[in-house]
Length: 93
Image (cartoon, rainbow, N blue to C red):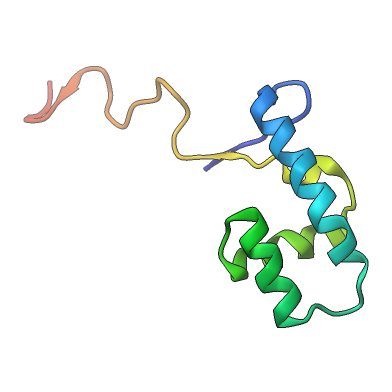
């Protein structure tokens, strides 16, 4: 499950990361094809795996906006529970 992040609810850190990534990925997205050397250099700069560089370029080509990288949070929302409040580890009452 992903919680949608927008500029309105993004943390300053999320916004800064999105801006940093855009500055690096925008020139790559403008290229018709990516060479393995360019992808490797970019991966090193961003301290990411090479495969993730491809996963960052693809959505930016479709939607060239900084907010493309305001990624949703994975996992359950804070405070959510799996069990009914009336249930315990031993079963429901």
